[in-house]
Length: 391
Ligand code: NAD
Ligand code: MG
Image (cartoon, rainbow, N blue to C red; front, top):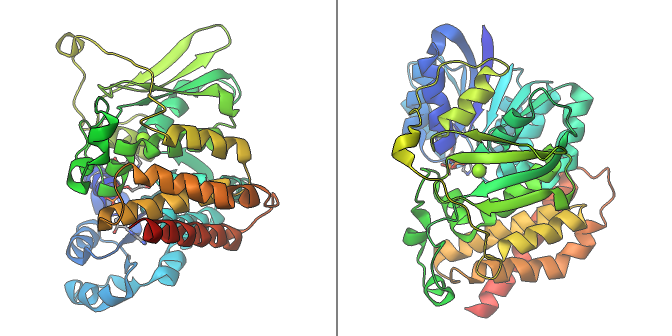
């Protein structure tokens, strides 16, 4: 039986992954090694029972007892804390979903890769913070990395059958988020509740806000650079408000390949779960007559400075991505707390990049996880100081 683990099973990607595992045979078809969550212990316990998981891990130490109680009477092993999470990720599995949000997903993903497993990577932060480390681990242990981000899954699918370097350009599509047409003045007043409401995709709160600032697309540019060994100038972003084309690849002969589908992450998750096969998936089928038209527009770099910052990070290299992501996560925390405004998030990140970017860019190529965490925490501290001075 195929051994699988899902880290971040209680989140938006995790719930969709569990849904597909259940639809594709559940405990009869999969030997579920580990599921993990954080505070949502009731959902985690329910998932672990439904899939007959061997282990359920909460990242939050204080949630150990509630999870233990929720799983009383079962033979499911319960554990808590970041070390337990890393240990569970190191348990051999054939396929592991990395769907924790933020840089907290990096260590479990690296532990899973050490077993030579296939890592279905939703956690784009891993590649932004530590692209070289993740890829070195894949190469060293003979594992496989399958992108789950819809854009990168699309690019991966467009490149199937061609050499890895066959493309001339990568065209990432972006919905533009809820404030695509808003003035800067209105954007300055945006509240967290407004920023969480994505027009097309149903996602976790943090990635939804990242989509509204286009920091999500910024992370995805860096993710594409790492995954497909692309030069920064080969990566383009085009706003496509309908989110039907998930991304495109251009070849030397001028041909473009695109991957299209409904805005349902089960498409990309299911692709990674069944790769290299294609299995039936419970997603809506596109009706082009009903869609009528697909439209495109250039992104506005003034209202969405995240895209410009991503270009700086790609040019800098080293651990500039770890600084960028740490600052971005800090900015989001401060915005959620109400201590900074919507547009201040990009200002905070720009300040942190100016302060720490050049140093991080000088990091030696064989950096390790501690180096990544070092810049991640310094970026957060520098960001926090900026936010405190501002409020
Ligand atoms: P989410 O917030 O819905 O879920 C996050 C999961 O991580 C939950 O299981 C939560 O319990 C767990 N978690 C949170 N903080 C943690 C911590 N500090 N340590 C360990 N576990 C923790 O997030 P999501 O929308 O499912 O996104 C997950 C990842 O997938 C992110 O990296 C995101 O960028 C990426 N992604 C998501 C979507 C989407 O449609 N939601 C699309 C593409 C990529
Ligand atoms: Mg995406």
